[in-house]
Image 1 (tube, rainbow, N blue to C red):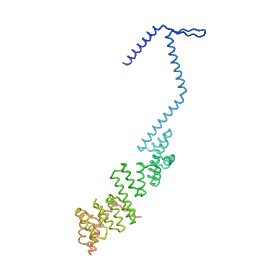
Image 2: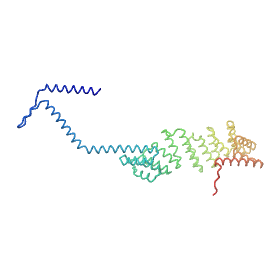
Image 3: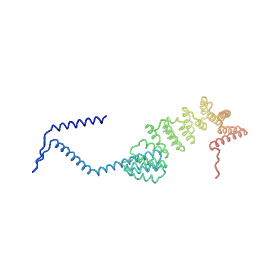
Image 4: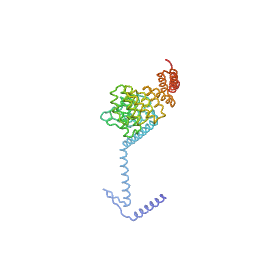
Length: 402
């Protein structure tokens, strides 16, 4: 329908121009030396319009001819940029898809076509690292010389990542130290490096920052901090002064954590400071019941065993079916030479949860009471349970003799 309308419009326009030209009777006289040229006004107008169009086309042709080399160069450059960008996108797609060989090949092609060399080197280095090609990886990273004035965050993070994968945390920290500010990725890598180096005193502060940035949830952050405090306490287990100093630094919330309390109590117990160990265990058990702490409580030979027995018997009111608590009470009563109570607690512990430890304690009790036959029976039961547990842990396999 549209083309029909155009036909009518063009026809009407041609008719109008024809009628207008027929009414125009003027002429144009061109006088030249020795010549006189007389043209109708209509024809002169047509010549003027045609001449202007011809001149315009000629000028455009000349301009296009002059600009042709530059246009060809721009076209080639644009096509090169498009190909480079496509190669870079393809390299990134291959990298995240796990096609590291293709990613390395495509990113090298993208750099050759004009993509930024620093970005390409980082991607190629990470791809070579995944392909276990350290020589190529190091060559890519060496292409980007570290400028202290303008540190490249991508380069520093990539270096730290590959160094950590190679178990070189000191070098990873050196790479991260080039960054003027610590962002989330650098904090996570620094945390890994500090943990591998055993810098546990610096871990809680790093975990605090990662928790504020919502990298770690509360449970994960608490677990990381708890592990750090446990490692610090275990590290200072042989030095009474250092252990006491570390324990004072532990926040109150983590003093009641069962894992931290167990590490502290075990360290104090190993140093013979059972009073401190008992206090740590009692405060932790007030917040959260833990069998490991109860067992350690029974092993602590403090200055006031009767007070320990009274405390444990109060716990027994709420934990009557706890075999570990009964075992601890049996040990404490035996230490205080309350033979009857010790035997009843140990037998109750075995009835609820037979363990080689309970059988062993009962065997020692029978020895103290001069009951050799009963002691041998308990020793045998203890050995059987110990062997059974060992078989479960080892799957029944024996180590081949050297």
